Length: 637
Image (cartoon, rainbow, N blue to C red; front, top):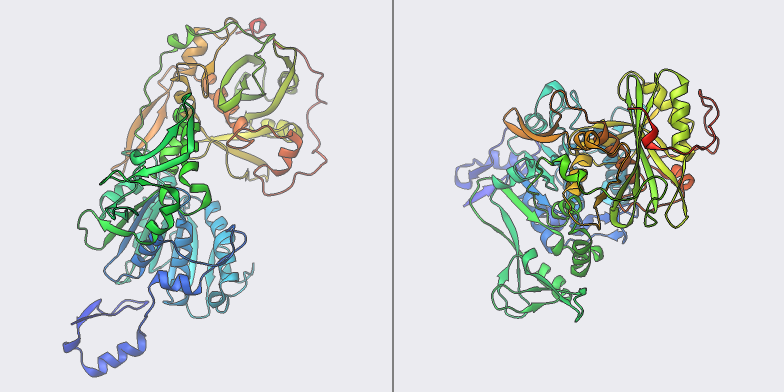
């Protein structure tokens, strides 16, 4: 007979023969290590509550079948590392919450949570853990209140009456891993960690794992939505695990199988129209039609099956088809696929966040001449009437501002409208007055409808950041945003604004993600969703298209780990690409769908966490100039 003992500290063996343990030692172990008769999923189903801030159905928590296996791995003494490669909408965050709750209440331990950035760590502490501690009675009973001057009760660290503790840090924090010792280390969304590591400190997962080395019974937990094949950290970790997948029984013939996208089918009407409401799976064994109504029963009766042995490393892959949340119904997944399938960037997001799989990147060099040949007969005086809104991107150079104006139709179909080069010293007011006139210009469609620029992103790079910030601050009501570009796997538009050292607001644009999106759209060959149109004449000439296609992706390595970078060859210029990136960022400031809200309403809620004050700050520039028509072909080059 083998018994398994656990503790919150080191020093005791994981397993020992009962026959060889002296009675006094056994009694000491019994007192120090009280037996635990609840698995983590049993603990969650018995004690956990969902908070109104984080759930559409607050109240007592009940786990899904596939969640139980993922949670119970955390209380399995044979498992040291857990890797979860997942899609969105599968309830993984709740699993992570309950891992933390268990090791606070049932097995008091020091816990470390590593999020991609410091702001994500504090957000997770505020929006997930704080409500859980408030609404779960057994946790509330041992929780203290957060106090600014109490080192034991802060947003970034919580200490409990029974000795448990939870620390929250960002993977971008060079010093965040110091002076922390933890038995349970949870790395969340690791594919979003900075590719350069935690500054000079090195790889974040290695740093965090070292924080647990003093514990023989430690748990290392990695979870993330995957990104690019060959670069995804979660995929690499999952491939090193025992690779568990969730097998469910066919409700008709009983054959067990995993749910695969290739087996999800739907009907078409006689006229060829897709009917996502008919979505169903086809049984691999007997061809049975499996309808959505059978899903709860299948999930409840399913089981995790490992594909290969891997001592101590449990790996789970789960995707949205298994989810019992209403927004992850099979018809909804089909509807989303039908919307995203023709846009490479949206399809990539679908593969990552719905299928929970890596995207095999196919970014290749695009020839500018091929784009030059497809220009169309429209211009600033007669923009197409299908354009619903305009955005602008502004790039700062030492002797000029470059402005690109983009028109947006349904499903992100794009028309480039105008490109202006405004010569002048950005340290002087005159060039900013000229920019103000440009951004106030009125455009008219070929049907006579007036369209104005609804949002603009102004680059704050270089030596004139303050001038750009002050220009935008004075025009916040017109959705003028000071931005800074950041490389790596960031969203095009940030969840919230950042602040400079001078407390000015600035918005971080995910330039790599934006370039991926633009190059994906440039490869679309037929007008429709995502296609980019270009006009004949003016500044849209060979040089423009050379700049637009000047960069390409390279794979580089840091500490043996591959990562991708957008590379600009020496001697090339890329202002046309940069300004399109910023115009895309301005479009995303309205939300993923790009729905056009009233710009003043949008300014009150966009990404700052605070309502905008109705009175705009005083501007260091002259009053906004009167609107003036802009003709790209008349500008100096």
